[in-house]
Amino acid sequence: MATIKIKQTKSRIGAPAIQRRTLDSLGLTKLNHVVELESTPSILGKVAKIKHLVTIIK
Image 1: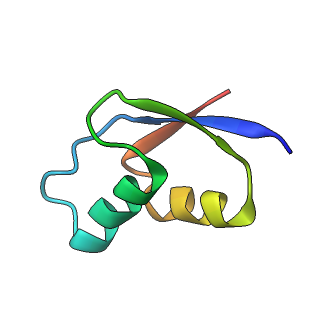
Image 2: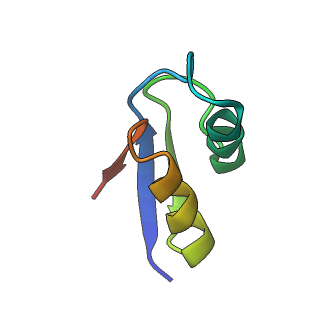
């Protein structure tokens, strides 16, 4: 399966608790942190929920 790199570009301060938990579940803990995850439907759904806080790196 393909992998995607996700980078946290905006701060979690001021975000609702559900979005902070979504960042934690993806493994994003601080600003400019990059994680590489498999491109599964559940991961893509989580990214869609917090698309204003992250960037997908090709």
